[in-house]
Length: 99
Image (cartoon, rainbow, N blue to C red; front, side, top):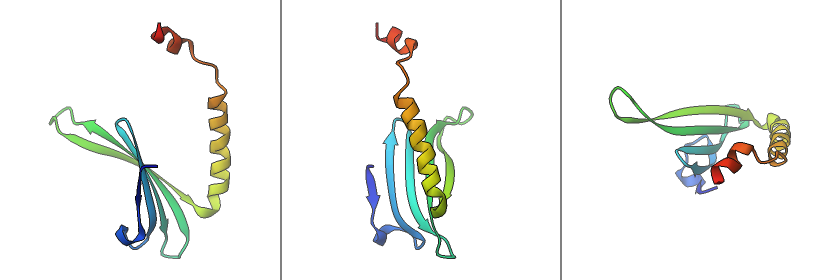
């Protein structure tokens, strides 16, 4: 992951923050603590968009929140999906584009 903010530069409830840029999207991984002292992970997708009416750019954001207790199952299921993706054969449309 590209950017890491140390604790000195983060808001009071934020423990750490990582970000990674992929094309027009940036993903933020923020580890925070709730008021009840429960750690949770926030994953934010930020995508640059063009407002067709004004011609100005804005950022569309989507967030998911994962409690610490939910992370093992989330990780397990994500790893299963990634493994399936890794085992997929090359799609024909990709090979046609390379010709």
